[in-house]
Image (tube, rainbow, N blue to C red; front, side, top):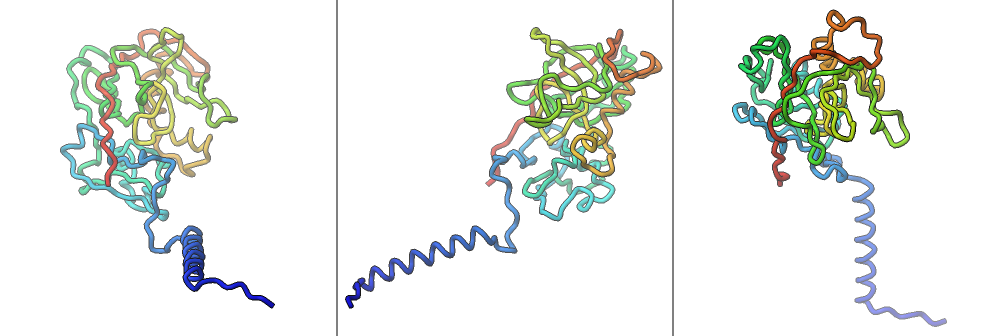
Length: 290
């Protein structure tokens, strides 16, 4: 019987190779239990909301908060979670492990937070006036120049910016849906509950204020999106208990039944609707942190 001979150096190389292969396979299959969860590679750092720079935040002290698997806005901030959500311009459905949000160092500084002026001179002659500040991703409702309420918004992203200028709300549609976009590739048309139209472009595409997701940065195709967790619960089955209902509040204020008659959910043209001013530029996106 003949035995093949192998030099001891070759054996060492082979043993080393298979050892490395085995260790690599184990590491890939079993992450260290003490490792912090990493951000999704598919997100390309867009999940870091500390990179989105709003002018009004320069006077508020905050730090980065990394979201772990066990974290939620409610578990981290208790009853103040609503203010943290508004501060970050994000809804609960978009809070997930691996992302980073802005956490105020003193919670009292963001209770009642709004980046818009409490009084706005250009709105004094108007019974109702809407001001959207694209730089702040925030919209406010004024009556005779006094701010009645305000809320975060998601405007058009780069390449599909929300048009700037002066407009007027000229239609309402309680149960509007998008004619262009779907919830998923094979899903239903994207819901645009509580829709208020303010512009029609040269391609006959309407631009609306409506319910949508708020991911913490400009994200729409030109419309103005507002919180509405009832819509999200209906479509995405989360959150279980809807609380943030901004689109409903603005819809009821801008186009109330007391002025335009009973709303049966169908499209309705409006006369003498509130003025909408859209101003500013998209917030600056800072480079990824290292």
